[in-house]
Amino acid sequence: MSSALDRLKKLTSKISSYETARKENLSILKDLYHETGIDKKVDNFESLFEFKAINLSGASLLSENLGEIKEGKYLQVLAIGYDKNASVKSKNISLAYYGRVEGVQSTLKDKVVEFIIRYRFEKSFMTLEHYHEMLSNFNTTKDA
Image 1 (tube, rainbow, N blue to C red):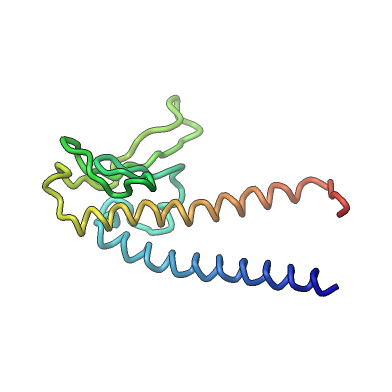
Image 2: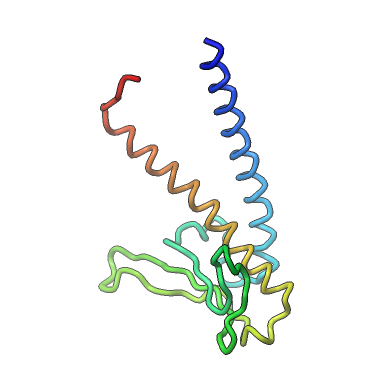
């Protein structure tokens, strides 16, 4: 009985930790939305999450070399929009253009990289919630 209770406490703690991290992430993401100038192209913060994805050119988003610039490239935030009624379903949309990456201030570049990572973090929660809701359509349960 005690081990079941311990597992429940660990799980509750982990879920609480994720929700706290998510709430803090959203708050910082909103600030970065303004600081990076993306608010000039996307009027409403919540509209960001209508995009399928948001990508970055000009700097790395890989964990091994996060934020490392790609010389000769342009720093630009690109969103992938989707219109199921259009003949071409998806299209790239520029959300922010900063010029040659070598000329962009390091602090701004870092904020842009952080914005993308924080956006993806929140988007992953939204995707998880979406699929969790979809699973509720199935009556299959497995007894432990």
